[in-house]
Amino acid sequence: MTDVVLDLPVDTADSATRIEYDFLGEVAVPAERYYGAETMRAIRNFPITGTPISAMPELLMALAWIKKAAAQTNLVSGDLSDDQATAIVAACDEILAGKLHSEFCLDVIQGGAGTSTNMNANEVIANRALEIMGHQRGDYAHMSPKDHVNKCQSTNDVYATAIRLTVVQMNRRLAAATLRLVEAFERKAEEFHHIPKLGRTQLQDAVPMTVGQEMQAFADTLRDDVARIEEMQPLFMQVNMGGTAIGTGVGATDYYMHHIVPNLAQVADMAITPSHNRIEATWDTGLFVFYSGLLKRLATKLSKISNDLRLLSSGPLSGIGELCLPQMQPGSSIMPGKVNPVIPEVMNQICFRVFGGDTTVTFAAEAGQLQLNAMEPVIIWTLYESCSALITGMDTLIENCVNGIRVDEFRTAQLLQGSTALVTSLMPDIGYANASRVARTMIETKIGIADALRLLLPEQADRLIRQYLMT
Image (tube, rainbow, N blue to C red):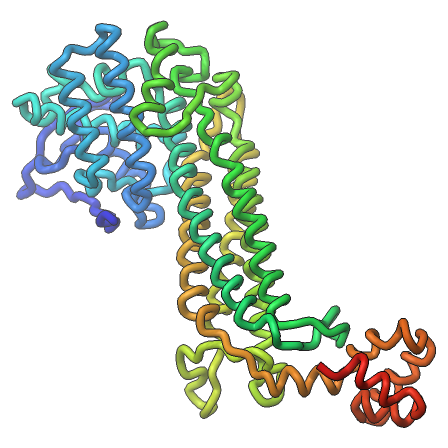
């Protein structure tokens, strides 16, 4: 991973700077930096979270893929010289190798629909390309961030495509992490397949089951989410590259418009295809809402499972106490012997953040106007944050909780034998009315099912106990 500390440069009389110019005028840029005037302005404009866009290395990868593919396309069309295209490609390859990431120090939350991020990439690539060509940084007559690196492009197709390819990369990691958790629960299902326990509905005694069945249910519900996550991949690989500002392709050559997406697919080694309607794809963020809902669905299941682990391990002496979770840390500064289910608790809290993130994505997607949605920066950061937290949270749950779960078999047997759950098994034989009498007697007298049968149905009791209760 790259350094993600936000490095805000400060102009002082002692600092070495170079003077650059943009539409608004003169800007002093730290001489050692590869970014330029527009990045410098954005750094000052958006001191919001303290988290730079380099915290999303997948986004930097996507931007480098796009700029590299664009340079190669413009070279073939004759719109870039061989020297220019070769230098741009070399600079992009350095970013793809993990270099120059500290130059991407804009805040993840920014105005401008991602323009600052696109210009950050353009400026870094241009200045590094200038060095490769033997020129000084800032000598934009030989390599311009806009006229060369950004040729035939707009932020509105570059950024929209980059954030989709960022989700593709994160989605692969999310699917793999979810599958690891599925497999962890499946191992526990096999380990505990023979242990009977009490099944509960609405926090009340219901019917018998096994611990293995309970663990397998956890595994299967999450495996379904793996399938849904994987189904999202091709949707995010439909991109609006070549559409430029609003999808019409203004400013791009015909050759570029027809070849940029196939070239990008080759550079990124992904099955990237053009959007069926680039105008619609430039402003529509509905897919991100869909994906955010999928993250919320996964988080809902993970939080429910974490709740169950906390309940089933509660006590340990006065609660349910069927499961024994790994003891990770002392649970109190005042209560000796108390150990809390801290790993399921942290998973719950991660899920709460995902729930809130879904609300953020919904409002941001709704806020799009006319031919563009200016709120894409908060959309991609929110999804990235949610994905990252779910991935690390599931891995933590596996390593520090699920792998070490044990079953208190004495406790599971005690609770099962003392409950009314086993009465349901008798009902086909003795009828609902007699089964109800047995259950009521157990509740009112606090005796076990065998004793209740001997009391109420003495002639059938031994057979019923042998047939239904002995394992």
